[in-house]
Amino acid sequence: MSKKETRQKTRMIAWGITGAGDKLTETVEVMRQIKEKDYHIDVFVSEEGETVLKWYKQFEEVNNVFDSCTVESGPNAPFILGDLQTGKYDALIISPATANTVAKIVYGIADTLLTNAVAQTAKTETPIYIYPVDQKKGKIKTQAPNGRKFTLKMRDIDIENSKKLKKMENIKVIASPEKLKKYFK
Image (cartoon, rainbow, N blue to C red; front, side, top):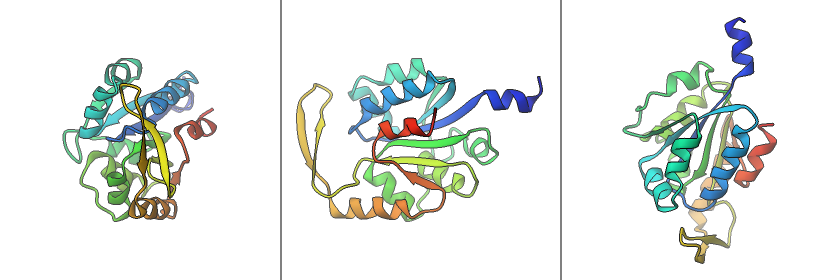
């Protein structure tokens, strides 16, 4: 079997998780469902993403269930940019994405592993899918790790940045983690 044939059978995703708690457990469930469709998923977690994954008691699961799980140690570490730019991965997904991550991407700031990954991958044909947690004006109901429900009001600046993100090259903004399943069948 040639490398090309092997490559066609192994579908690879680089999945970034930031420090957003909203839809985090739903994201992990969608990740599991996509993995079950024979996708190899390498997970890249921001420093704050690790904190939030642990707070929601999801870190061990992500670390054990997926093909690899690496926590950011700098804007270029672990070094995933080469693999993203040369086509090792079929897609880059950032879900969930904090308002801070979205703002940095929109304004070209690439000072974290995941913002740098988006900036460099956007220069290629590898598709990028991002789920920003702050997309619609108004209030959302969300859930704390202990199950307590609470309401958050979306800030106008964060909503504007999500709208700007939708206009960027090679980036597909998704409405919810669940919507990712239509792209990865």
